[in-house]
Image (cartoon, rainbow, N blue to C red; front, side):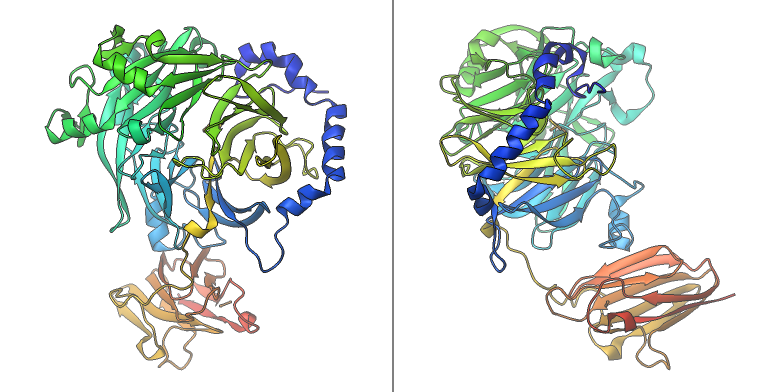
Length: 623
Ligand code: CUK
Ligand code: CUA
């Protein structure tokens, strides 16, 4: 048997945990789990959603380096939809039509981490979903009326906003701290000058709901450390945010070893109301066109709290009184008190500073370190309706339920295998449901039919209603769920068709207005798609034919005039490598150069009626 080394944890914990970890993979154990599931028929009933009925929750899972979002129904765990965000998707024409192509900019993929739903008064309001791209330093927003991406922005001075997106309780801000420190402006600077020249910039991003646009409001030039995870405060801590760091050693090579030297890293504690005020007062520098707060110069509002080395997740309790850090290299969860932190800050109970940022004394803020027996690799914590905590154990492959008030371990359940995040029902709100938690596992291994050496990731639904946590369903998922949102289905209000948009100059809603216009070497087609034909120019002898000259720039504006739920049309031209989708009532534009001469059939790619096969025409390119 080839030995499998846990990827995140690295050598130190790897060795430490080898016994426990490999024990989890023993065949006996796997058989055991299967036997339990088979004998327990009621689990099947718990997840069965009869035809005609709908799931109770939406699960919106990050697609990691697929650049997509995966939408599932819970408890059935049926995959309903893939929503492209940072990567093109020919199934929906995403990244082909002008609007989505423009949003994607120069990039063809993204690494989507940490989806976050918009909130009103600390509750999911079901309107928008935010996410970030670690690979190409972007942020995106998805509208949940249509489950489509509405805006993508590049976040300057940042390299990999992994530590995001966590929204404040009224969606005032999303904070995007960077995973990789870079020089401001991302200009060249020798790694010998790392500590002086590099910074770990955090961005405060706002969202304009009316325009559906994201915007970087201001940035903070934090020290050149790696910022891992963050969470926004709630209630009494609503003006605050917490962020974990690693590599406070400022190592520039062999991070696996060099970034794990110090016994302690830090939690960065931020008072965003104070930072906001600073920006209003002009207490910042203007750098690379951004309002930049330099903590050593524009003092206040930022504090450091020591925490066990290389922490990963940090999570605020639903009541907003505590934050819990999980130490991926230290087998402990550390519970901190906001009240104590505020007190310590008021009394200047500091133990020195780093980079001009005061370090609050650990003992003054820490409530307890919790270390369940043999539980290894704590990564992320979620909560139920009674305030109990559920922490994923990456190395010992389990979820541990524990009481933040006492540190007592209450229950444990094995998962298959190596959970990263877990997501609780209504988990980030002030009032989690307490019904389910889903383990987002990095390794599926023997869980599903084999598809070769590489397997999907897996998500396991855990029922929290009984005395014991119980795994009741499992579903494969593409790479890679770094967190998800689990939201009550009745909070999401989708539309069934797009409204007519009379202000859109490219839209045509009746046959008479269809036309093909030539301006120099530009050809604009104002066409419609309807069951079961294309009409590009109703007055032409052949309304479903587009004829251009080689080298022409072609704009095809297509409106779907079937105002009927689920009647989506597609548009593709053979050999031209393009595909666009028009949903009911929607108008879309695709732009390309007719650089190949010849005869090219065009057709509808989305099965729309019994005569869908007839929904075709010709694209003729004259030499
Ligand atoms: S991270 Cu912690 S397991 Cu949130 Cu990108 Cu994946
Ligand atoms: Cu329209 Cu198929």
